[in-house]
Length: 299
Image (cartoon, rainbow, N blue to C red; front, side, top):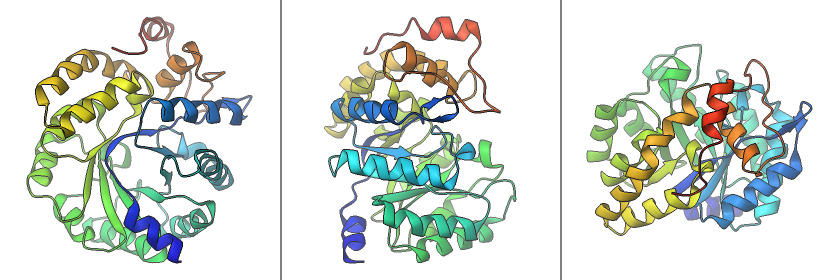
């Protein structure tokens, strides 16, 4: 328990975090590609990684696969980068069980999405997250992404949840710039707000976001990191110049369902062996593949 308390107190939720894809080979996790990708991201200077999240195709991973990915990342990175494990779902009880198992995996914290499909009201969302956070000593990062879950977690709910000692931050993928700005203008104390909409990364960090969890940062990773460092140093002019080069290409990774376009780019860049995704996802269209293959690694 003491070790878990140290993790909660020492976890720094800032900078560029990458929600790592889960490479597959003939339907199974490709561990070699996964480890090689972690090495690549670490060398590019990211602040942390998320495993078994949305971009990691969490919805088609078994609990055992999620645990394997988390344990493998923790062992390989060996304290050099923090690891957040994707632990979320529509069933509070099952989510609690998985969160407890993640403690044994060595995860530094969990990223937990607003419960989907059930469409709970704000009271249900609050009780869901309070139940999870009270069941584990791991720090909990909330994840609001209404276009996937079907329900939006409002800022007042986020503020109430931020009072819980184990709830330390938010991945904000609300897609509502007004909602995001209102939260950033009056953020909860000792609470990190991370941009989750890749296309809003620069405006959100310019307004005080702690960083971002960015699927597009699999590509041009060092440029995203350089933007963050410039913004942190209050050199917003330099950050804006980097953003002008990155922004036109970010949407390319989301024209078709994530993470298929990212996996295709990574395969062509030699960073993973195959671009395989699990059904119901399919490979990108030929037209998008051709455009992805024109991307340069850094800008």
